[in-house]
Length: 262
Image 1 (cartoon, one colour):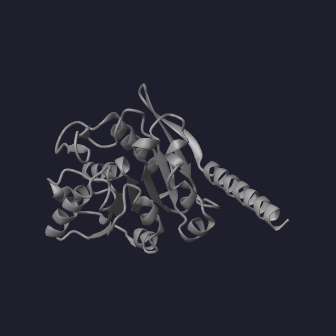
Image 2: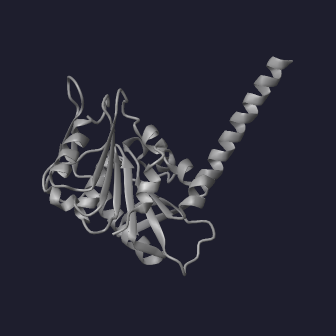
Image 3: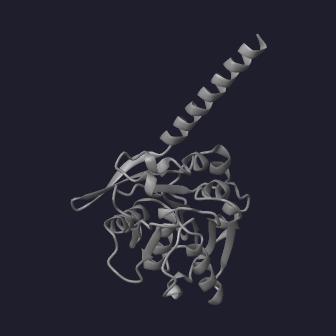
């Protein structure tokens, strides 16, 4: 009987967690940004009791390569349950924006080559036209800034993997826009780093990452420190590509993030 009750309780708990996850995901209002013939799906989460007469910070979060597509759902896989948690929403009343990159596209201007031996090889371009996804992202961001009541001194961006790379590039292309940025297991070309000066940075990576080498983050942080930028670096020992799991659990991440202002 005790075993049966334990099994029943486990199923009920699992069902509750799945239902809670579904409710959290649907808290994001799903919309589509249109620019010419191109579209970008996105989810937007408004603070509880949103009041257009007040100004709110914006948290833009960019997903990784595995969540690309057009279902306006996959981009919520990592982060949405955190941002919709009551504890987060009550403490940090912010507008959260989670756009979705199309399949086959990239946030940043980077080329990935499959290495025959060792880690994958990414080539970050110092210059070059933005990707279609980046153009759409910038257009979406401009539309959101126009249509919602935002504190333009408290705009934040973060992302994981491909989204970590996108975080670096979005800041580079808009060097005066953001107050703080937190790229997770990302990277960028360590040149023209003066364009990254304005925001405060907290960079995360796992030193055993088999997908995006930690050296990409390390070299950016070294350049930032050489220029005396405001940067923190957390390198997780023995952690692979999913370093976002630990970054999301950092007790100081969101207090730090929302304390920054331009």
